[in-house]
Image (cartoon, rainbow, N blue to C red; front, side):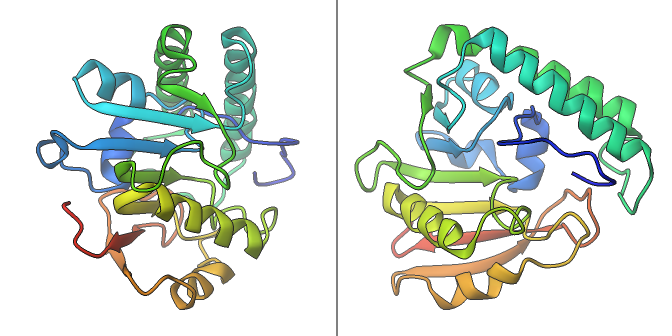
Length: 232
């Protein structure tokens, strides 16, 4: 968080399904008959909305051991902290949302959609897990997504966390891993991005791809890690 507004422990907020589609350049037609995993999913509305549309999607988060009530309280409080920080100004780009108020309303709505589905799908679609130790066999998912965990928090999460997380997501993927954003909160590229590119397995092709989404300066790219013979 910026401007002195901090959250202790994991940040748990609700991004919208529409944000996911733009952040990860998702084409829903190409995802038909594909299974998807969202890592460190938080209170995003991506999984509930995609599930309702008939997609095979699962979400993991280290906080999914908590009750719906506790998770809603966490999300609402963390969104309030974010809104206060953003309202103080800074170099944010108000293109996707027009201002902090609209962002707060839409993400709180996403959180409510998540909570409703979490009550029904906890333990099935929503699984408590650390991204460094995912409870799935190798090559389980066509597409693995990771939003706002790696790179942006490289001041909190060290290189080993990044390397272990990426290797684990690659292990459970039989197609692609997509990661967004690649910059820190101030818009500078993470110090770990170049190290990632130098430490990938031989069967993985790394691509930096422009996305139709930007909120922080220079945060208009995602990292696509494509395994050999990917079907996507």
